[in-house]
Amino acid sequence: MSLQRIVLLAIAAQAVTAGLAQPAAEPDGAAGSDCATVVVQLYRGLVNSIDVALPAGTDPQVAPRCIERIQQYSGWQFDTPIVNLRDGVGAKANAVGSHPVTFVDLSPIAAIVLAMDARDRVLITFLPVESTGDGEGSFENEFVRMQWRQLGGLRYYDVAVKDNSFASVADILSEDRRARARETRDTGGHLPLGLLFLASLLIGAVAYFVSRAVILSRAEAGHGRKGR
Image 1 (spheres, rainbow, N blue to C red):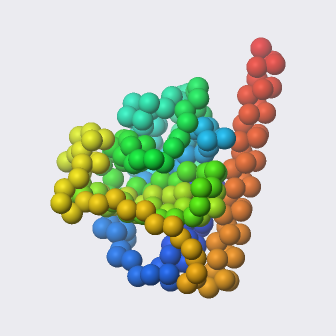
Image 2: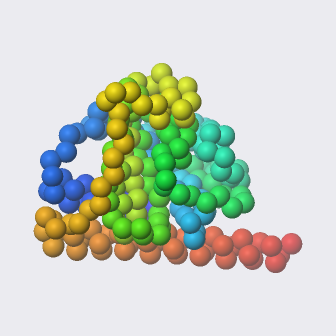
């Protein structure tokens, strides 16, 4: 099972539990197929690698170009992206240098959305995240509608693009009279214990596979340096 599929399963579990906690409006374009998935793997709070998955039928060269644009807009640096066609159309790249990730604002999210070739919807996941408490939040303006949620070591953003005429990170984060970013802490008091347990198991599985991938990639890099 690919990392993207594991992540999507975990997101689905969280979406179910969140939906039971309180009704939520369906994001624009949620049922559409023009959706990009981005997984940012972290290591001790630093960007370790990035995976981009695009809809089937997309030109395979679009995925590495998206990573190059993420590099341009976010300031993160990556090595040469590797195209992956095993599970649709995708690309992966490892980080070069130290790039800390914090969630004090939405700039990293906006940079990824800007790079995604005008998709109708972008799902962005960061893991494993150093837990600062579970919670959720939202942001909306004339260009995008964002919803995010954190549970344990996984933090994900569901971004519906309402108007793709934006040209910069500042455009995506611009506020109008309707736009208000909010974040709330999730007490989990209204959720069935069984679903919370299921979500915890899925998050644990994601964390295991990511940790294993990080360890293996760093081990391979170490062997490569010794062989030179």
